[in-house]
Length: 130
Image 1 (cartoon, helix red, strand yellow):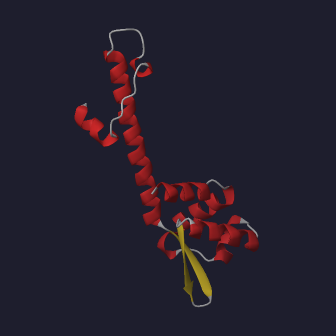
Image 2: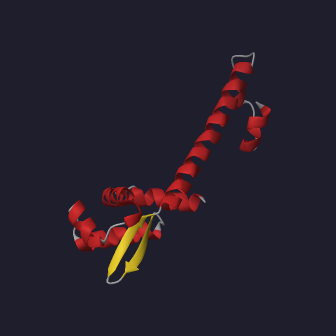
Image 3: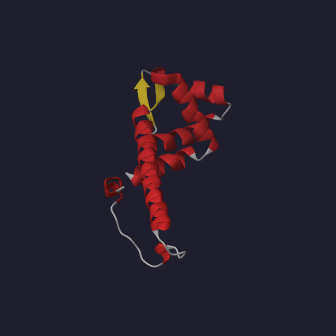
């Protein structure tokens, strides 16, 4: 799952690819052809082709042949998976931070308890213990 997230985020970390992805999200299920994308975004066709290939490889967009044309569409399923992963990860990190704060405030000494020992707890079990 993390490998897919890294691929998706890396693909979107480039200006032209981000612009292409946003245009395809706005286009919705109808998608857009490379010609329309190139005109709309003012990107050279050969440059656009390279970026479309990268976005397809990251699974953020799909490609479908319709007659003589290729139509590209945003993959809302992949986008939702990416957002879900980021939300899940953020929630786990917030829970771990809350536990660390609780350990620090519960310690009667001024010394940070995290400096004296390491606690290994599965993050999913943290919610049950708080």
